[in-house]
Image (cartoon, rainbow, N blue to C red; front, side, top):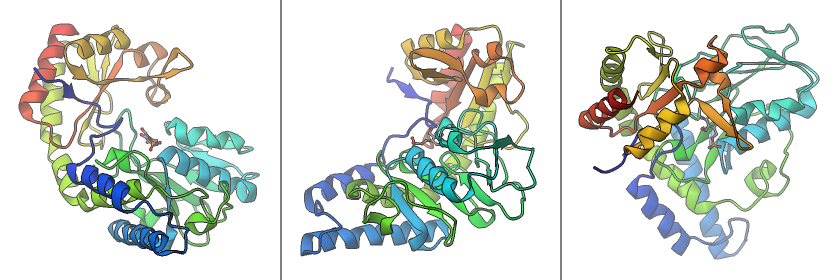
Length: 344
Ligand code: PLP
């Protein structure tokens, strides 16, 4: 049996048109966009074309988008760049944020955890969708604070609404785009200073732009409407999968059941079981899934996204995340459920 991939929240295979666009750009468009000769200007034109297309899809001004290499980088540029102006005031942060967001916040003098919002709060940081649980979150209403949304997981799975935000990040490799392209969107006038200096990206992100990745990102964005429709249709498959795996064992619990969640994600607690061992057994059986743990310097640390929901460290070590690709088929999901039944 071919291997079956249920780890779409980690990364997704690039769309064939993305692969072809990246390949072609590496052959035809290798000019440096900062150069003033014809090769450079052609590359510059292609980048700006991509920026306009992506901005139109997000409903923002093209000049407000900064191309970065990853959402991790975008979050670091954003939060470190705001720090000189605002870092002496507290940030109100959702405790389940991705480490890509929590790490740059270490430079801030004070961080309060939502729902606590200090009166002199400078920024509110609330991810649109959690990568591990799939739970969806709305941006809290806080006056006079910069509202930041990490849309890395929501993009292409559920509609993204930037009207309640001032800054947001997106990652191409989560939507069938290439590695090496991500977006930092900042509303014009945001208090912010560049962290990586250089003339590129209007002095907001130094470093020669990765043109093939940026063009590949634009192609992935072009395919977003169909991707989102396919993801929306996964709800029935996800619900059937969850009903099936919880039907035979009372110690299996779906985290976040009944709350608004990503349509492709099931975060499952196998109470009393070792998540790492189950993950390895499923991998051997041909299924790529993810644990609720993160590996830091060789030691496995249960996920804070799970413990902040009130689960114990032991429970967090017993969690597996199943995240479907948009094209997941019922028979593949049934095969996964059967394997879980055999192994759990
Ligand atoms: N934010 C969230 C919610 C994520 O899930 C991820 C990656 O899994 C990131 C940020 C980091 O994205 P990237 O891989 O582009 O650095």
